[in-house]
Length: 544
Image 1: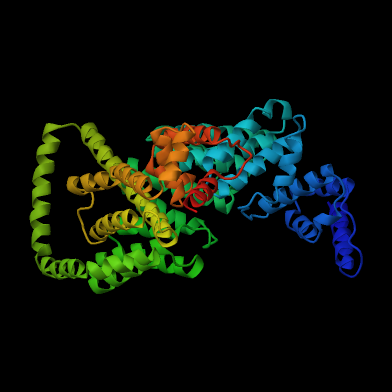
Image 2: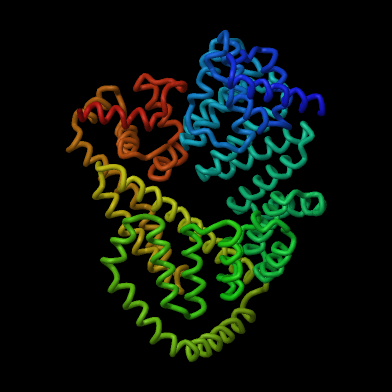
């Protein structure tokens, strides 16, 4: 280890001296030496590489290995690469060569770039190609990276069964390589996918198994473990949630790791405003403020009957998540203020209603207990909780869609009206959510379902706009043999959507295959430009 660090410092010294001299060449021997130290000294190696001029590299093999090492150093240093300019020389070189470990690495790190720019179809194609080479590689570390990356992509596509299978494979490979920390991290990711799929018993067994060696967990894995325990308890045993939350907050010694927003949400659900404010203050101090912070703060103020402050926080949330929200608020101020006034009047009657409601509930439970077994009641409560969790996830998905549409509305003229119309519908629902105690009642659930299903209408309206404003563009796509649904995808790309957003507005399970078919019909292969960028450029050319 000391010799390795000594070598790195010698190379650093040479690089420093080169500022006053001719830059030294980075030869294959030097690159090989740096490769052996990449797992332990990624930051130092990145510093060396970033000071090396590509013009000093001699030979295509040296250039390929250098750019591959550069990509690995960036990734291991926690820097997300969103351009293929660094890995591209390595990809061009190794695609012409027989299968090798470096070719496998190149495919993986090219997929990482595509994953970072959210072109999941392209990323999955590179990963699938890399996966076919794993039997020859026999390297569990690169196999684990490939499976973990596939798991992340499937998670974003909401295909939790596929994600779970890949996280399990990643965990198995990390176990082979002796990396227990990453083995545990991927097992916890697999358990999270099981909870999202409703496979609670199996997920709880994994959580319990990992919890046996509680003291040996890293802070990051300990945080993931407790988050999963809390998610499981909300479904299986809601009475224990606060106890687990208290244990969680006392066990994580690094406050910058703790998920304070998750804690605040639980306290709000439990009706504990003071504890929610404490958690949100910790979020502000250690992790900063975002749109979700203001949303939860609005709910906490509302819970504490501080309606003026609740409204103010919700306005901050809306402003922070996009300029369109400001317009919506100004247009719908009368609606919000009327609800606010009504809330004050209703508050005076609240205590009477609570007493009456409690009496009604007690009578109902007495009859229910007399008519049904304890087991059937538990099953009914679990179903209710699953419905609530499903609605929460749908609302979170709607919030993400809103933020992405705001970006499109600001940056693209094409289809601006239909984007504004959809944002108005979403914002009106969210306002109702923030100031409505009955969010999980059937009418609210039906409204949410209708809003999400209306994405189909959004896609249809978007296609009609392009039929009228860009007939050459549509004619070109038709001439290439694209089907109607493929042209719908291209129209979404043309207004600025990336692969992730197109997946949200269409069929997530088929988007990967449709994207691949579109590439083939347009004469693109997996190594050409990002499909969304290509379609936007094509549209601009047709307009010109």
